[in-house]
Length: 108
Figure 1 (cartoon, rainbow, N blue to C red):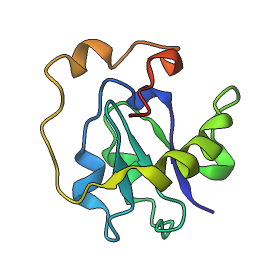
Figure 2: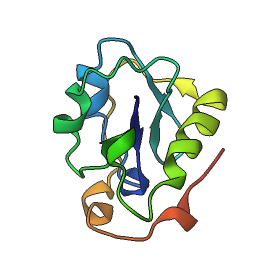
Figure 3: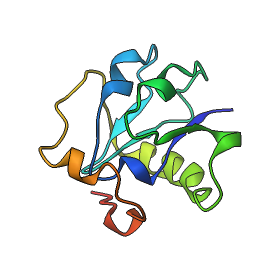
């Protein structure tokens, strides 16, 4: 099993999870992060660190968010690793509680 970043991360892109990851499995896109399922060791550390509760175990991804399992794999293949915490976008807090953000995903 791997962990999955879901749409709550879009436009928030907090990187608290990156700091705690022991294997550097996070990949950075233009406006969100994903987890590379080939790198994730299922340690669970990132789940508690995510301030917007965007990270789930693959088996626990909420209904309506299942497509993010495949999207993490797809996007991780083309995005660059992120190995150090970065500042969140200036408007991240404003986006933190916004729902239904998939249409805002930038694949870059």
